Image (cartoon, rainbow, N blue to C red; front, side, top):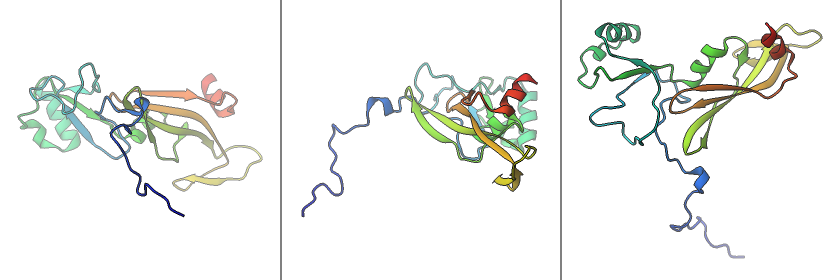
Length: 188
């Protein structure tokens, strides 16, 4: 038996399908721990790989020395005060880690035991995260370990979270309207 094309042979016509092409390559929010970034949307060099019309994360505009000093102190990054690239148009973006960003919004209501995964939507990276409602206090149930050694007696994958990789905007989508914890939270 003969098998040809191993390793696979590619030609110039074997490009990625149009729906999977990355046309907006800038990603400011991701799955790895990242403390902060300084963005100069209208900088002299511009953002590398920037495409006209792309939004940037809002961040904090460094338009006053007091803001710059406060952020330099908070992040213990004193080079902010002296960097020539930082000007009045610069924006300071923090909470770039998806789990940290989403956790600050959802609080203790949702747990995220799985890693976020990227998808390409309309040419840009979007991150999807599975949100689980969980509690230790649920009648007639046996506790089990979901994440970080915190036992739960009830868990349900009821929410999908989508995070824009460029702007960091977060959207929560309820996919299980019958979840009693979500219903109680919505009424509360």
